[in-house]
Length: 221
Ligand SMILES: C[S@@+](CC[C@H](N)C(=O)[O-])C[C@H]1O[C@@H](n2cnc3c(N)ncnc32)[C@H](O)[C@@H]1O
Image (cartoon, rainbow, N blue to C red; front, side, top):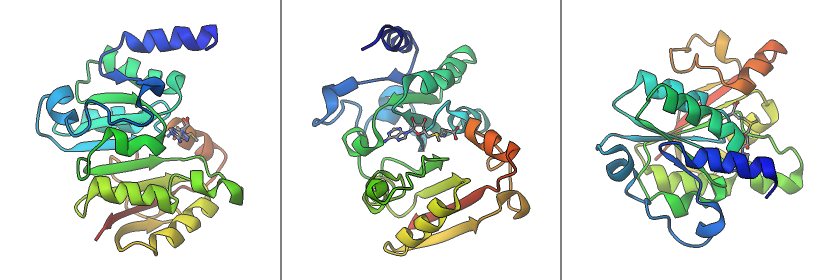
């Protein structure tokens, strides 16, 4: 690991409710699997994940609005996730945590039905056909989300990328889902509430470029 990465890793280690298990959990269940709410948040409140959270704007801002829910921002990049963790620490937002892992490892970290909502905020579109498997809305990821959420949970996707949006709509046809909202122009749709109005770092960049924001929410049946 380079010097900068080591420094960032060390800095994250000093923060409360930041977990970066590294490669030690590549094949074994993490000790908090099924126990996040009891052990980390010390309550029985619903658990919400933000996947590919970057700086964790959804995690932090939703946590402030909903003190009776718990939020975990997940990203593979420590520097980005560290920004959200720092804000949470500085502002003493106790219903957030940050987990630095690959999303492909989710089932080692969370139990079936442990999650009530999943937010996928501006995922990398991975346009090459050979990278399809790495899209966060591809079938293998959907299978994981279905297990983690059961039939009561919600998936939310925000993206500027119409190709990824259409791809996701095709993929969910393979699953039994109920669509709650589906729009390729969120800010013209009339459905924007205080949560949908939260803007991530990438969303701000896309809006400045004049791009429209697509939004989809659904549950598995
Ligand atoms: C385009 S950025 C969006 C970040 C943030 N959600 C936003 O809207 O500003 C995509 C994020 O997903 C993360 N990411 C991509 N693939 C991932 C994976 N397999 N596991 C964990 N994080 C991943 C990247 O590190 C990056 O921070």
